Image (tube, rainbow, N blue to C red; front, side):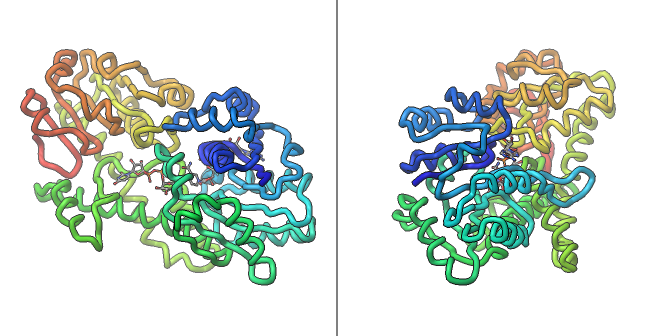
Length: 439
Ligand SMILES: NC(=O)c1ccc[n+]([C@@H]2O[C@H](COP(=O)([O-])OP(=O)(O)OC[C@H]3O[C@@H](n4cnc5c(N)ncnc54)[C@H](O)[C@@H]3O)[C@@H](O)[C@H]2O)c1
Ligand SMILES: O=c1ccn([C@@H]2O[C@H](COP(=O)(O)OP(=O)(O)O[C@H]3O[C@H](CO)[C@@H](O)[C@H](O)[C@H]3O)[C@@H](O)[C@H]2O)c(=O)[nH]1
């Protein structure tokens, strides 16, 4: 099947290469010339495990190409829309201008019978509006909403082996053919018995924002417990383990620490609240405001904790920040809690050096005022405190004895509850973590 993918960022580039891997003939379209040039050359424009190999394999198969010209999408039976939907500047709502621009550009090539499939995360109601617009301008064209649930760091695996497929389709006679087309697109995935939910547009759109809201709530729940643990001397890690043994609760997404960041959870819960407000149902989601507040308070607490261990003042203290990406195995720094804390520490007078295995280039572009080092050892040279803010495997596996040689003061703040507390304290470090007693 001929497929186009409009928008080749973290989601779209992986989707395009994965669809080629499934056997389709795919063209990825993006307005960013540098990104397209990199993708054409088989270079991943971002760090994502297994993506470069998949990209090169799909390019070599001759089934995958990239272009900046939407006319190269002409003739595709299915057009996926994968452009960004960031938070509007100064507002909670989602900025839909890229979706609108992508839709406008598709109008140049869309033919009756062709299917537009939205994958971007959008406010409920967007699909119905787009369907109306496409139906008016290209009668006989079709639209489905097929939200994506991949996690960065696992994007290739999640795309090729998703937990479920959700198809949002219109009421009426076209539904059956749309489902059949999507089943054909995902045939090898459908064949493995992957659960499939066929529903209306609004439900499909809401499944996505509800899922991310639930995940964010789970993280903020455990971080609220961490706040209480700090007040009572209890241990949030043991608490999470203990409640997580209950199957109804589960241990996943109960890792207390610096909280959630990234290009999805923060902006998606805010856009969901904004949309609820527009629909006159804002009360339904007021709890998400608290979820957001709890999350942001963790960043403030981390800065306070750093001040505490630095004898009450950050002025002139050398602080090493290990981790800049919003999560390990990614170079994505959108709303990164780690960088947010690093910048705050610097604002409060600390001399901050940040290191990260993959995200330094992106970080330097966004936060040029911070200092950067290539390795944890360089970052921690003569440091008064070391903060582990993104739990890369390299940092979890640091040898606290050898690492202790480079710092001025053996003080470590484990922002992700990722280190072996006993090993670090045994090596003479003062160990502090969110939601846990000092070690
Ligand atoms: N990143 C994820 O893990 C993930 C997972 C699931 C869903 N999503 C959702 O997918 C969407 C995309 O997210 P992302 O992380 O890939 O964003 P991104 O910013 O990495 O990528 C968006 C891409 O769209 C391109 N673009 C913008 N306007 C365009 C246009 N008119 N025509 C063609 N290309 C255009 C940009 O140049 C960019 O490369 C968002 O709605 C996001 O919420 C993201
Ligand atoms: O127990 C946990 C789990 C995660 N996090 C943090 O939460 C954020 C988000 O993590 P994760 O959800 O793994 O990363 P994303 O790649 O942003 O994926 C989320 O957002 C995507 C975009 O919508 C969805 O597709 C995914 O299903 C959803 O998990 C990161 O900062 C993590 O450090 C925690 O603090 N504690």
